[in-house]
Image (cartoon, rainbow, N blue to C red; front, side):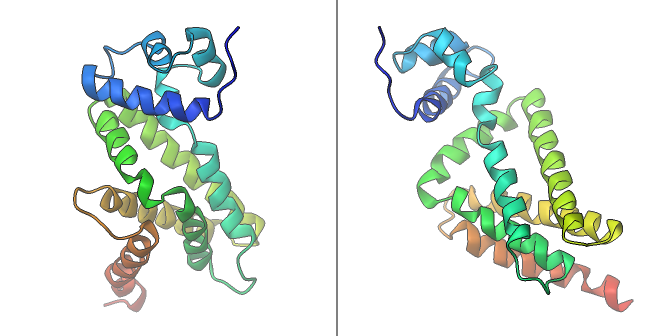
Length: 193
């Protein structure tokens, strides 16, 4: 009987990324991923519905962190400030030691249109959850949608910069920079100039 080993999903993720980089996403099977860490295909499917989900494991944690950031934010914040709080509350999911794994994951996604579609769907769902959390805080529909979409855009740009080769700044530092830059870009819309 196989002995239980902790962190099985993470081990499967690391093995999958290595195999995807070595052989390609389409050429790698769930069985090969499981065998790479000494597990069976059945164990793989206990943790993931298919090999695609190896790349998207943790999506619920990201959504939960965003929603928690809105729920626990100061009561007097505006909608966009609440969205910024959501992003900051998720920054712990992107520690520096996970940057190389995130880069490898993104390379796999960038090389496969079906995975790109799944990544886009993830961001849409994240935006919908953020908008719902903002509405639950009493933000009106339009402000909730604008703030949620802005928040997801800031997150996406910050993530892309965080995984760039040679980038050393923390995810939180990059989020702050992107937030300021987006504010500068859209300010003329507000002032009418």
